[in-house]
Image (cartoon, rainbow, N blue to C red; front, top):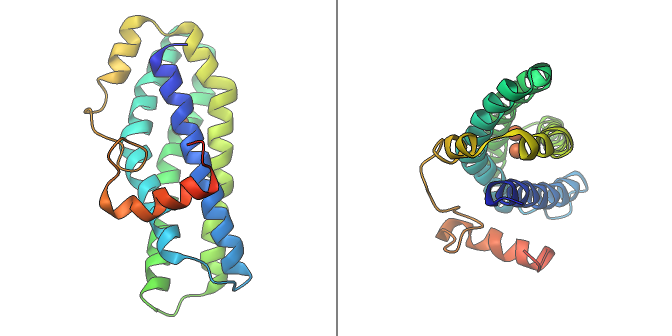
Length: 184
Ligand SMILES: [Fe+2]
Ligand SMILES: [Fe+2]
């Protein structure tokens, strides 16, 4: 397996772990059982920052190459590209709800829950579709030159959460991830 494919899968696994962590807090929120709002905010902030700016940009280039190699994938890829935009917008909305809750602004609980639930379902389905239908095709069809274009799509930057040197603001989230899933 190439480094690019391994990284692609690893990032999806990271995002899936974060969605699990978010879901645990959403369940606690629903049950009024001491949800950790800061943790929820950190999860969604990270997902709004790193995947949207790095992972999805690389995918956008990989998918453009993939359509050239297999035009039959065009409808699915058009859907995935649209989902990147929807995921970003849904993340922004959820972030603003969580910030309102943290700031003690009166917020309808049902709206916060609906935004979180929609985000979880949508994001998980997106990852599953990519893992099942697109990453394996990319592994088969993309050329070395295609992969160079994918890598060049984003500046080399450390992953602020899963990288060697986690940023200060994500220290608590990293600790929670280690508690929930020590193998990461
Ligand atoms: Fe994607
Ligand atoms: Fe992805």
